[in-house]
Length: 319
Ligand code: MN
Image 1 (cartoon, rainbow, N blue to C red):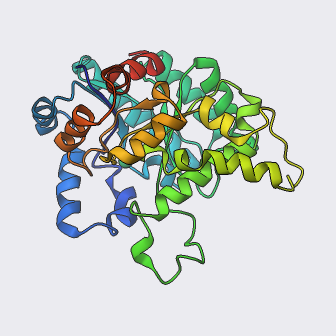
Image 2: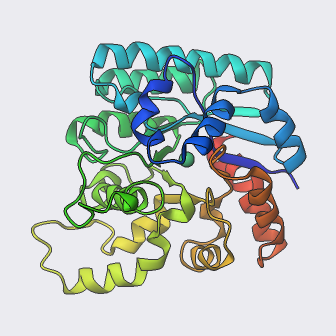
């Protein structure tokens, strides 16, 4: 069974510094090992892919990447450079690697142009955005130009977690809750809902957003979103599609990255459907062979397994 992973990270020595705050969340020995694997794009990684039965990785710059750069001109230059580097890796191994571009969202118009260059000239499949960009989220009016370009090119934006702007009051005093174990998923799900209620998908009805980590919890809440929206004082916000769940079913695609558990996968299948679920490992932060083993043994039909393993990725990313 051809298997394509969509959340597969790398980093370069120049950009590794952006990850220092997130690295502090991990146990030091685990970070050292992850760092070694992030920097090694075409060495041991290929052998690991062979051993795990992962045919292709869709590579993306590790979180927080370019989003953490405070200077817009530096962000523009570094995004272009890392996209060029990634294109070179893909050109050397076109059957093993594809790529999601890094975008300098600090400069929205230039970011839209870079997305178009990355897709048309470098062959990228879309872009991956790590949470907020200097406090700005993807529903911001100035970032509509990026959504417009993505929709025009027919490519998805993958929204990946990173540290938040601040620590929410409810988490203050509990640093153990900050990071991928809890706060990142909650913030990323909320970021997606900002885009729904902020009108992104009403402005661009066929725009597509990918979320990792089995949809960051969203597949579990579809019914309640609609039920409570029906009850809610809408605060002046209306949705063209009527119910919030319509956007989760239409505009949202999720990957299995970092989740090797049948229960949330079955929930996602029942709520979003097998056409909207794609495979990912969250390499190097999760074990690649554990992820492919989970996909092979999950209690789902072989037709759904094929869609998740490769068919949906081939269609959504044009692979
Ligand atoms: Mn990840």
